[in-house]
Amino acid sequence: MNYSHLRPLIFRFPPEWSHTVSLRLLRLAGQLPPAAALVRALFSTPGPRIQPARVFGLDFSNPIGMAAGYDKDALAWRGLALLGFGHIELGTVTPLPQPGNPGRRVFRLVEDRAVINRMGFPSQGAERVARRLQRAGRQPGVILGANLGKNKDTPLEEACGDYLQLLRAFAPLVDYLVINVSSPNTPGLLSLQSRSSLEALLEPLVEERDRQSHALRRPVPLLLKISPDLGSSELDGVLAAALTGGIDGLIAANTSLSRTGLRSPNRAETGGLSGAPLRERNTALIRDLVHRLGPRASARLPVVASGGILEPRDALEKLDAGAALVQLYTGLIYSGPGLVRQILSALDCQPVARRAAVPAGSLFTGD
Image (cartoon, rainbow, N blue to C red):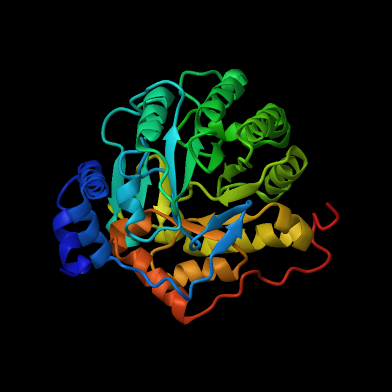
């Protein structure tokens, strides 16, 4: 059945319920070989002509990834891999279990092809998620990341301790780690994006990353996920802190507090906005980041585009703007699980310029 015919039925149910059902189905597909074979047959992707992407020292089979937020507790990543993703980002994981925010907390904005969420990092906690990954073992060809967040009750001045605990727990279990300081749904978290706060946070985290890399005898890339709502001077501060601090890449970006141009009755709900309204803004942000970094610094600090990818052209647009990889989530809600296959088919048919031209006078060219 075409997903466009199925979507009205799915949208009759609450968003969190639909998410839970899809998660269980994909978990089942990842555990049962006959179900896995069926999903693979339905969503088989072109492979031979798509160039692998080498980013952060890792080899991605393709540049399309699953963003954090869908598989928070590492339940269904094996099933997700069957859809053709080149990487899957788990989480956000917190050190201790926490329920997230109370009440109804996810809202579809159908008229805008968007979602507002105020989940607040619901997590089964680091110990349980890590134990699940240990039992599952590694799957060849699947790049796994873990998105790390502080507990809601942890004071901001103690946030570094939460991130250090998570880094130690997950460095041996995944391929890369992401420091999430940009969710609008954890009180005060966005303030950690100031240059001084970031520098203080990143120094001990990068030192621990280096210790883990040495012990594991492999690189453990450490990325930073930023907000789409940062102003120009704030972006300069983030880039300076990331470059001097030794971060391996940026994910741009998290959900937005902006409500510009929305039509849906749900537009007044609090939380982070994702989906089609962020497409142009996100592409402009990617292009701006690459421009500010310049060619040498952008090679040291690759940018992953996350935001507003609902059609193949949206992913191609991000790659043309200079993104090294792209991630999607809300696009699956509106376009269905076949979206990955569609994007990969578009990539197969139309090679994309890997890096936009960057003027020699860019802000960070000398770094």
